[in-house]
Image (cartoon, helix red, strand yellow):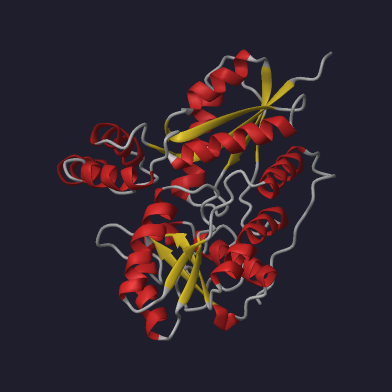
Length: 357
């Protein structure tokens, strides 16, 4: 019997089809209608979305997208397509590769259909989020399972787990960052991650007592907080700081992109920036290790808005470290992640928790 043909789904969060209000509104409607993203009562979610967010936010977001839109399209999609092509070339004859977005296009149903049309019978899903969160990883997997089980005969599925402390991911990001930080002559590095509401963290705490209960609750990964997004962000930071030779005084962790009035995980990037300037930081380098491809949150929120804010606060320069995009080291890391996840359990590599540095 021939070996079943395998397919690899590379899945990122998503992007509008164009930097205009209409496409942005469609994207936001799909995104914010997800109960894992906007986790409030369905009636409240509908009212908030249709009476407050969608009437005003699409125009503002479209303006922001226009500032970073590339001639080929959305940066997230352009860089993700480049990664897809590079990984497909490395896996030629081993895996069929297809890119999908959780929201927007290319959609998960279309990507699965394309793989099935090429004879794929087994699937490996790689959510392109280094740190796991319900609003990204779980939502993506839930939708992927829904799509992959719609056939009469359900295909076998393997999932590449979150790779926040995986050596391949950390080595690749350090390789990208090292020359940029050196050229910028940065005197401090800010690791800015996408924020999440505090309630999301608490919902992921199986003990109900550990999450955000103390100032140091995220400083070490344990069985209790192993799946905590914030704790995984700190683990990523420790791994990168060690590889970049940064002292504890040489870097700061913060969280960006907060919305609404409810508390989000702290500290907030837009509040940390003036604090750093006040402390005498002049040349700041910013890394965004929650994103494997440059997008609105890196290019516009940090590269433009945070840069302007830091200069207004007295800083001399803010340098955005590019994301991994389709860097060769990241391509090799993706290949390694997939092969490890698809290996028999007895052969799969096991990685200890990163110690606190």
